[in-house]
Length: 407
Image (cartoon, rainbow, N blue to C red; front, top):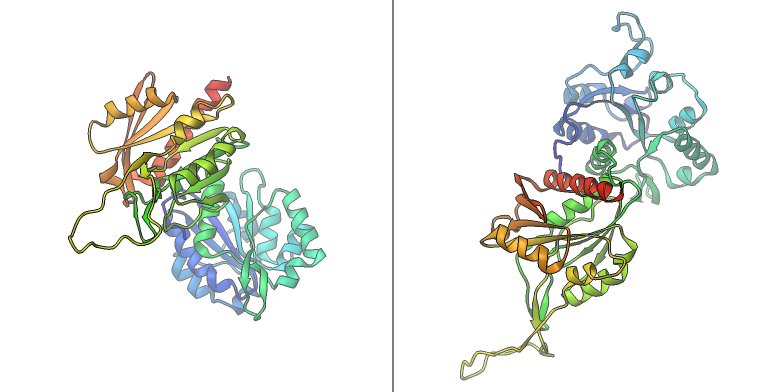
């Protein structure tokens, strides 16, 4: 799952709740939105108040909750106008089938539907997270309403598939709070790679010695997965080829799991020409045992130490860079010393336009990193920061270079 990363700092969001048992998730959603830096004004329908109290939402938001279009607290008695004039977005979670029908047809008989109709559509986008029984979601009327809402510019987040409160299983669950947070953060990110395709490798590779032992490294994959998330946020179609890691796939990213360097090579090379960008973040093993043992190697009575003949793994980055229709290639150099020297050597040896260097032992498994961007003109230091922030910076830099190449 995603963690709150401060990606909503300075934004003001109107959080609307319509009726449904998924209202219990809205309390956690409110908490993570505020933790991410947003200020949140809650608006609830009468049906929503049957599932969660306004007191709870007021306590979590630090703001009085609005429930009626007749609320006299507003000096002009026009809450439906005032609430959206300073808002950066309206997010409705949960959005019931009834509420979706109202929005699709411009019906405005309560405060929430009224403020959606009265909001300035060019400055206050509408995002909704459907939550309903699977049959209600699949019903032609709901699907027609969803299509109309999309045509009107509404962003529909989800729904998810899984167990439902009624005991049935299927599409219709509201996304979990952290997944919704990721979607909202992504919505506000600049779409600098919109329409582009990006192929990324991440994590370590594992080279078998025997069925229970192998050669690998300490790469956690966190940097590569952060880059995949940042590229998807920027509007790209992202394919992530991942070595053996314990990380959830970023939302909207297609993932291919591999184990060895050869498997990673076999997954990447045919796909590379179909992509605009290739980012080789994975810490690929340079060598592997030439002939892995069929069974576990046992200790000998004479305590002799086994020896292995090693063979070189295919060079994924150099192979992609040598393709006649190669994508824009970005290499990573995880070093333990002389970072700038080794990164520049890799830039020239692999024949790529950009290499990103870091000190591997200082970042493997950590949530932060420091990067050095090396190209033919020089180098740029990105000071230590969380990996997602660095990933967004790197993606923006790649987008800038792509635009310059096509100008």
